[in-house]
Image (tube, rainbow, N blue to C red; front, side):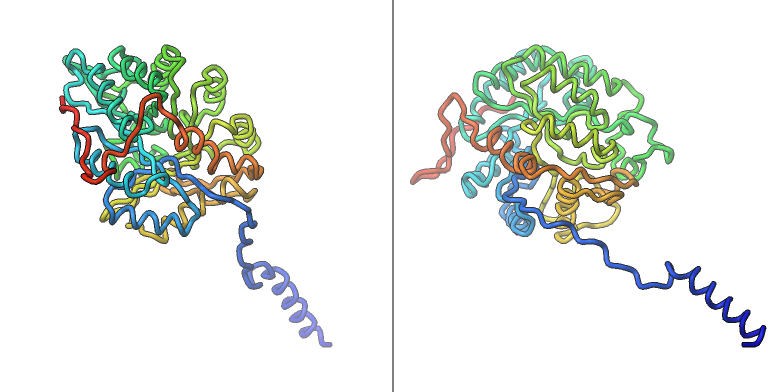
Length: 390
């Protein structure tokens, strides 16, 4: 071999070796391991109670293995939303449960809490498993002087006391992610979300600090030890140390995972996994899925339209996080944070509790202390008289 040929041969060999990683064919991503998942209950949905939306959701649920679901947006007795919810409950029977909601009308008037407690009992009597307070509690509802009503305000006590008497649940959405209490500028890590939903920003004005909302929540719960509380969105999901202390101190508190895998997945895997193992009997699977006649919402707002196949991937991303040990994966709702998460690979017995048993026990088979009837059952199909709207 001539010197020139020898040098060309060496150069070709070096080039081949140097580009080996780039030149070889890309390998297909490793499939998720097969897990005997069993039936799934989505304990936190916001599906519009119309047949069209429910049919769409049922098609999705059949695809992703969800056998039961619980709407947290049942409305209040006397509203069209509540009447429509009763229609869906009548249609789906034990496949569907729902929580009622308070009406903030006349919240500044004396006796509001007593009125809402009475209405709550009527709602439970026709099927509501509890009442959900949206984040207007602490961040929206105002008194007669225009001041924000704190979460531990005494006007809520009659409702909490009635829930204990009925054995019904109280679900509360406390605050929001920490970034929503910081300036909504491009430097905010959730800016992509806040610019699409600017009313989700609670920075400035007279909004209390996030931890003050949690101090109010603790005072409320401690005042009602016989009431069962469900803190949705895993409570303060960005601070598992705080949540561990809270759950240790307050045995009447449960949590769900709705729309918080992005935050949960940022913690070290060992820490998150230990939390889920320790509280395996008190954590419910939920997604915050919203389906309407002309919209989907998969845990949050979206920059682009989403549809059925996106919703399938949304559930698959949840399952991948809880079931596998994969590293640096996409979480279910990318707009909730432009970062990757590490999966926590829960044991099968814990997955069964998370996906099904905990919600079945806490919500679906929960027995109230008063008779519960389907107001649409019977030959006349007549509904119970609605409570007057305050």
